[in-house]
Length: 111
Length: 113
Image (cartoon, rainbow over all chains, first blue to last red; front, side, top):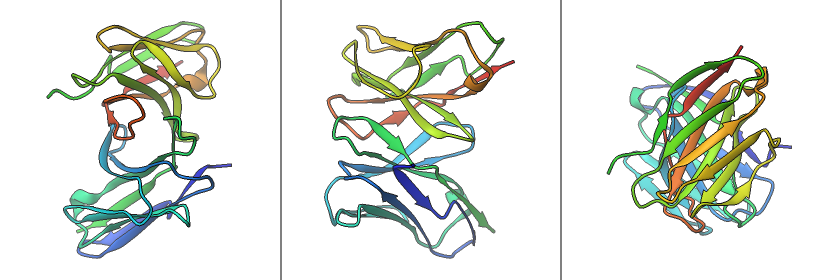
């Protein structure tokens, strides 16, 4: 079974709308990170969360970590076409530096 | 600083052949990890090298191997290629020890015919 479940699998929003992507782990999280990927290209690091309750923001993207729920959410405010892409959450669920990733959420932003 | 570079960017091989992919990490980064990405399986961890030693390994057959040189550059080798090995192979570098802030290269697209 998948260690990291992302939801939704895909999302289509109108430009200017807010959206949230969730990442839930079936195991204890020892660090969670969010990446963005353009199809067929490498991953771009967005942010890393390590402590329960931690929240980080970069421009219009905010990520939170709920350690008790073993869950993280990525929130985009006032989406723009430049936000389109595949968002992946990754985590170390072994505390040994071994990374596992979710299947990704494909975001389309309609102008 | 220059980013992570991978060569070649695209590769076409025939079943049964072997292939070597190269990854140059960001200067000063000592950890290099390799991943395989396919539409069906997503992004899967292959292995990680730190200071020329394999520190972690994913669940891939022994046909997949790697190594890291003293300058932290890494190579990945796949022997006896199978059709299912067609994928985007990504490498990522980080400062080292257990660091989750990984920086990815653009990937090598391998097609096995």
